[in-house]
Image (cartoon, rainbow, N blue to C red; front, top):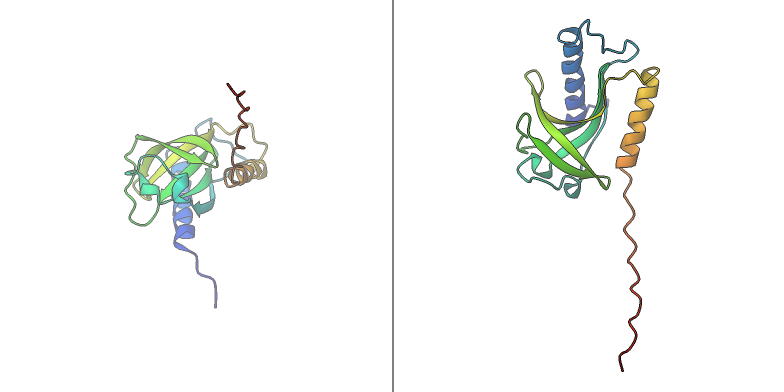
Length: 163
């Protein structure tokens, strides 16, 4: 029996398709495009509720995190899942992911729907090729998905007795 793509894989593929159209239309001929890069959405996986801990009305903690590489940017992307409320276009939402705080901006593409972005790189000329951009993106996701160690409790020096 062949594997069927998950709903999340289908959403990532639809995101790629939407940005390939943007590349061919709105971005065509702009000097900020890196000819050695292509549109790729990958690494999408659900966030634990505790990771998406700010603004309960924005995605309500039900989101998947991944990366979108294009010839003009590399962004962290949050995709709302299930019946999670959308983040309004242009609205900023703070999220703690992998122990670090990120600010995501609500976005919407007519052909795709709602998502939120956090810019990692733009423009993309510091990358030699797509493999270098992909390796960087993979490292970012690896770092964000590594559980930060719990802080060590501080030892409080004993107070001298006052007797």
